[in-house]
Amino acid sequence: MTRAASVGFLLLSPVCTSLTGMFIKFIPWSPWAIVGWRSLFSSLFILAVFKTLFPKEFRFDWSPGNLLIAASYSAFALLFTISTKLTTSANTVFLQYTAPAWVAILGPWLLGEKTGRRDWLFVGLTVAGLSLFLLNDLAVGGDRNEPLGLAAGAAGGLAWGLCIIFMRKKGSRRPPLSAMVIANALTTLYCLGAMFSVDFSAPGGLAANLGWCALLGIGPLGLGYVFYVLAINQVTALEAAMIPSIEPLLNPVWTYLAVGETPGFWTFIGGGLVMAGVVVRSWLALRSLGPTAQTP
Image 1: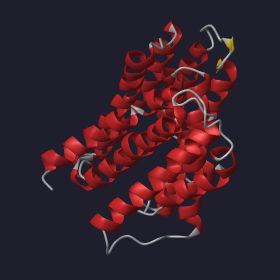
Image 2: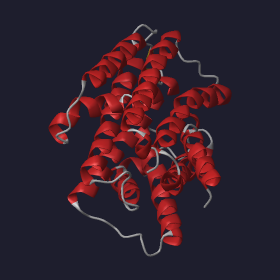
Image 3: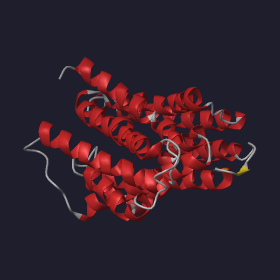
């Protein structure tokens, strides 16, 4: 694969994942049912793709380290879906990007890596940005529960941060190919009860809602992960850090165009602070490593 194609794949990955919030809004089922069905489709799709593209490299890894990666990703997937159902997609995706702050806080204990003053400044900027979310009108009623949605989104950011930490602890730039297959299979198992207790006569009908779950599992999530894996070895570390940051910019745009959901004013201000901190911290960290760190 050429480097240009790899950069294109890396760009397609966040474009795909940014569609997640929009798809979730279309499905009238509970978060547990949605994440269970979409995880079933994701696991089958990712397994088929990697078994076809990497028949010799693909092996199921049941080591404790890989299972921790899978469990933390599974928790993140559920919390992300709950948050998207209860609050705006913009709130949810910006909260996901608090993960680096959790890595900075928990890294000294779980990885033995020292957190520098620059990291603590970034953590402070993240906390300041998130506090602005509370200035929005926190609606409760109907399908909306802003406080609970924000709490689920913040917990999802923690779960994604733990996933990053466990990847680092395992000594890999990305989890082994089987990690996301195992993660989605685990999610399907603990959501089985919700999957088969949904109201199959809900608006849209069974076929349409299952279709949306299949599109969610294969398109935004399955393809997004496959594109990332195919691209990661042919792009620079700076590109790998910066290009995925377009996801929180696109996510609320798609959701607004699809269902007319408008994020609160303070979400844009606070989310902008969080994203500015993520981008600047990534750029400074990679710059300090010198030119030898630019190519994975």
